[in-house]
Length: 149
Image (cartoon, rainbow, N blue to C red; front, side):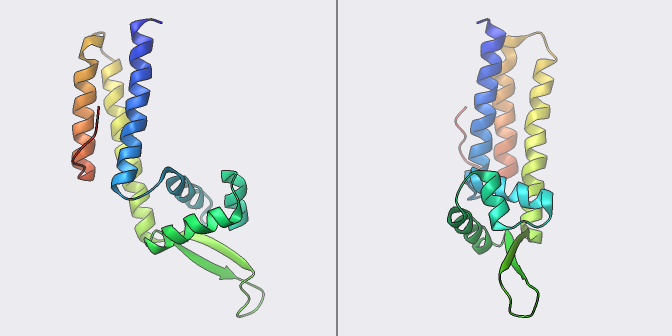
């Protein structure tokens, strides 16, 4: 492998680590983040559809959604043919959940854009310095003390 390909692989690993660190800092698992993205995309989603999409059981989805609900990020809505009918359950994001997703997306875009500026240069030796600067920006945005780069 050439040095540029190895550098790109390193970059991907660092991005993955930064993203997971950001999620951990806000007490969110990758699975919970993906559930929130799916719910946001569909506006409302049933536990069955979420389970099928994620490839896990409905009880596993219920546990994740319960945790997200306790954090105030999603809410449960019962929809039925008459009052008191709770056979059909939907999950939707709360305003707090929408704001958190927006913050994650904006900062993820900033991480990617800062890497784009690195690839515009021909000096691959400066790549590590650019990664360190990007990590500092992410730490400040999310009030994170430590990111291992």
